[in-house]
Length: 322
Image 1 (spheres, rainbow, N blue to C red):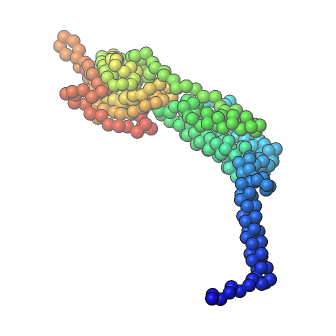
Image 2 (cartoon, helix red, strand yellow; image 1 turned 180 degrees about the vertical axis):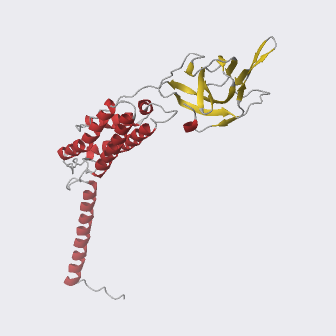
């Protein structure tokens, strides 16, 4: 006979009941965990996409306005002086002063603490002021000597004044006053004399005759000197010919300058200038012969021509006769 199975005692029944209870507890725990992961029955999760509150500005707006006023005030005064200065040394001095103050204003604004909303505009203004300082300095240095464009014309073609205005508008729209009185400018001029005008005319009483042909792309002034003194200067428009009569006998050096926009007071063009002279002298002679008088008739062509035999050399502007 098979051996009888042992009877399950009280201790065995207790262990079995404990195991069943543990399994039920585990199932309940898993069920609660699942509910929590679904968001049901638990506290709602925070919405990470919700906008965070705007940070409080770290720099006082009034303090920045005060810095702007202190930085731009001296520059504004210097720019007004440029606006009222007469062309010449007074204007050049005013431009140099304004250039230094533009640089100083840029330095001050670059180092200042800036409110968050003004930071991009402040950086833009600093860059524009540095460019303005350079343009003011360049305009002043361009105002002297031959082939000198008016500083107001030079400044009128610069981009920095517009950049300063654009940066100022951006800051003003945010409540930061950046008013600057930018100096007046002038457009490029195109002054010309009538073809054949004698810019300078000394004593002429001979019989010689000089014709100048200007086939270059620009107007020209031809100057004849004798013994380091100017005999006469003749204005010849481009594409035109002009003649001077009654040239005295003698040996002359022939200079010519070409360019655009003739500045009468300075006796010079203001743009695209060149300064040259013919290597050979122009010799005029008047000789009495039987039955009359022989005199010299010369023709100079300023542009290069096929078969031409006249050579020219460049002359420093400072050495060109006035």
